[in-house]
Length: 449
Image 1 (spheres, rainbow, N blue to C red):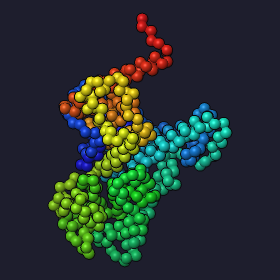
Image 2: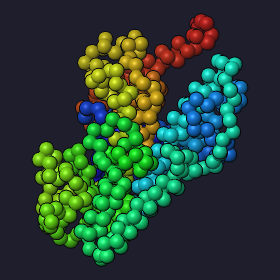
Image 3: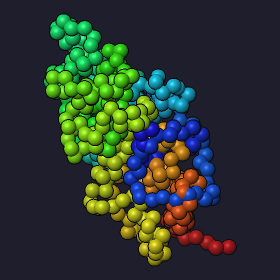
Image 4: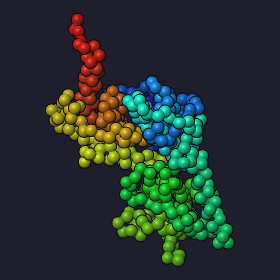
């Protein structure tokens, strides 16, 4: 199956689930068979907090109403938790893969990240109001009662789902206007015309804006990563009772209608094949691996499941936000400290904590959140859990990092576990030192009796 890469969320809850054999490209470079000296995570419930009706204010500059407490910030925290819980249920292994809605699951991903950003804005506004007596109190604003009703780019989740329905209806109208039947090639041509001409969707080969990585933003702006453009294509065709499958090939995610005779997909009619109609210019680009696909090699591709596709989208978020977080540390890899600890005892001394590279905290947290969601899909992927643990380390969450990396060692190949072991030992010492310094700071001095 398609592999995606990286770890995360209810990390404890995830370990209790079965893993889907989905593949992802890990951010770090390592590899080894595991020792069983791991610390199993304690399951934690992630039931969504019951959302109360509180006012919604999307403006980043808005202040918080209460002088000692931000009710809006607390509200967004509840929305954030609810979005995670509903995402977990949406991709539950108790559900059949075919019953998973790609659009709904990816909207929950976006809702959680939007709630996190809104939470940060409210905390900043609350701090500003406390610092400045002349700050105006917030205005009353429209409230919402559930994560599905949270506005994202002017529409809530249900309205964005209806937007996909509207695209499908435009395709139907296009077919009626042509006065044609349901021949496969004609239907795909109509889908292409609506998506790429009428709606103006376009693929961003180099993603420099996070808007290309969230489904609601793609539907709003038209600019999309390859995987999200494929998701929209699949969802529109599903509404037209046309099945579309896909597989990752190099940097591309190729899609096609399944057929008993693959040669039909590559038969050129009017200058284009069905495979070319669906996948665009990449199939003719000699620099792309997609150009090597033919009717024979197509049969050898692993069809991505819905969980695989969601995993690819999450892995893209992790890569994007990690690059953003480490932008001022060019070339920094998640696994860089592992090699340093393995090669040199001095390189990872107790003073190394102060030498840790500074990363952008908001982008790092968004990468961690995407990693948590991906680990729900792939709880037994040692590479994803390693990368997740390393992100926790960079975020100075040493206790959680020790726990995740210890669990990783149980699944990792032996040689990889040997790389992790000295790092985890030193990380454990750093955790103890941090606890000790915290106690010293609170009590002034430690008394030995």
